[in-house]
Length: 110
Image (cartoon, rainbow, N blue to C red; front, side, top):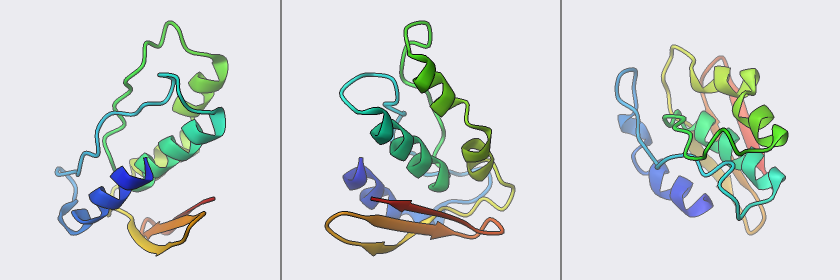
């Protein structure tokens, strides 16, 4: 997930209203990650202005997954009108910080 975000960061300057970089569909709810990792994944895609394409079977997901996918505050960060993709400002062994103008949103992961 972080590797994909890092690759997507290279294209941040091209993102704008009507043209979004697509790091691929969300894996939230598909298995293989902890709930906390799903929250990080959804938040990271949101701040990167990625299309929030749900890739799981919604009829089979947990209530926790539905809460993650339906988080209005995270979705609002993704859907702001300014349309600026986050850019990486700091990365270390255990954290990643991406920031973008939205009237400001910050995601600190780790």
